[in-house]
Amino acid sequence: MLWSLIKIVLFVVLVAAATLGAGYLLEMEGGVRIAFGGQEYTLTPLKTVIAMILLVIAVWLFLKLFSLLIAVLKFLNGDETALSRWFDRNRERKGYNALSEGMLALASGEGRLALAKASKAEKYLRKPELTSLLTAQAAELAGDTKKAEQVYKRLLEHDSTRFVGVRGILKQKLAEGKTDTALKLAKTAFALKPSHAETQDVLLQLQAETADWKGARETLDAKLRHGTLPRDVHKRREAVLALQEAKDVIAEGATIEAREAAIEANRLSPDLVPAAVMAARTYIEQGKPRYAARVIKKAWEAAPHPDLAAAFAEIAPDETPAQRLKRFRQLTKIHPDHRETRLLLSELNIAAEDFPQAKRELGDLIEKDPDARVFTIMAAIERGEGASDAVVKGWLARALSAPRGPQWVCDKCHHIHAEWGPVCANCGALDTLSWTAPPQAEVAMPTGTEMLPLIVGAIEDKSDEPVPDEGDDTVEAEIVDVEEVLTEPAPEPVPHKAEK
Image (cartoon, rainbow, N blue to C red; front, side, top):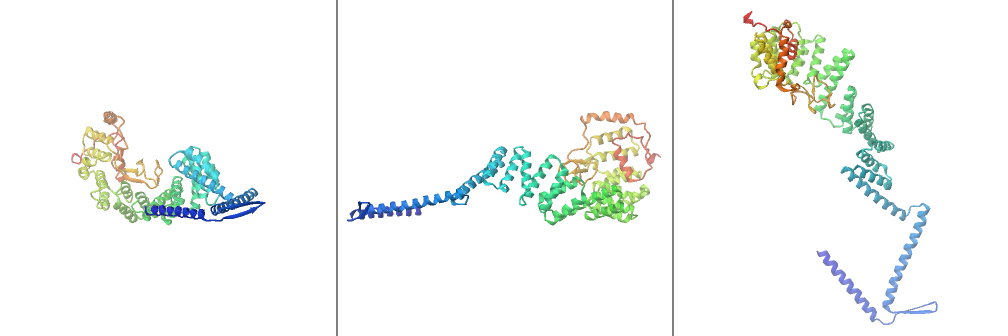
């Protein structure tokens, strides 16, 4: 407001001064006489001032036109001049406008418009390092993958844009499912920029999918060095990769290397159940049962698991059921109230033919946390106590429609796996398998519980098959028998101890 007032006052003062000066010039006497070519001109003071102003303007215009003429001649001769710079600035302005409009079109999902603007920007700017990426992304958005690949290949020609070109082609090959080519490109991109987190993840994923465990461990170490992976996560995934590498070595028959790798995997992550099981079996093969027991107990402290119990049973395969029940107290006292501990004790008591104690160990799992394993154990208990076929079949029928309980489930896609693996078989994610209950039961009745009478009827037709031998006293055999009750025919009831 104040500045506007000042400008108004200044304008009024200048107009007043000009008016006053013009008045003085009009009142002055005399003038300027000019004689030229036999002609004589007499100018009043006011006309003299106006003529001088016009002369100055004419000289300025002449000089500008003369300099423009010189600039045009130089421009035609190929030299850089103000005229050429003006054209360059005008071209750059149009190019940058097209570039910004292309980026906005790309962000809004208008592929064809973005491609047209990218072409215009490339025409005006002549800077492929700026426009090529926009052109490639616009071509991909428009569905022209061939043109996008051509542009990415042009980016490979310059050191400053080579990584961008490799990364673009890598994404295309991944989308096409060409993992072999994508793996080579990922290694190239990693060599160009080893600190790039996305490239590290893609390379690690591809190496895991192609079972290149050694290369995956090197990439994992690079992620730790460059700070893109926490140390605790690195330690866990290093153990996962070491374990899978050990499994491959075992498959190749190199037992010494496999033992070392298995023990290393367990050392890196003692709570990794498959690593603990493999390390324990390695110690058993080496005749070191105490080391095997120590490995299993440490893993059991982290999370009780049936595979750990099976490996613990392998330490003394020839012991009697009573001796096994006593030795297993080393595990069962660690987490006495854990669900897996109670199921394990129930199965051990079934093997020892102490069926009432087996039922007591189950406790309230039947009401509060039932699954197929709980119901099949109850079926085995009832069979051992001499219950009728109808009672046994009732428990088996309930097991058929019950959840399967904890399994190896992918944390990312919830795919259920029959056994543990470092990579999800469904989504390909690394180290995402957890021993947990799936969101939905793996076994679903096709038409609901209406199928149960048919299934029970099928069991009744086979009820006259011979009774399996119950002399096997290994925990693994008992666990397998309990699980197989779901599909095998029900055997004849076994008399209770009191009836013998």
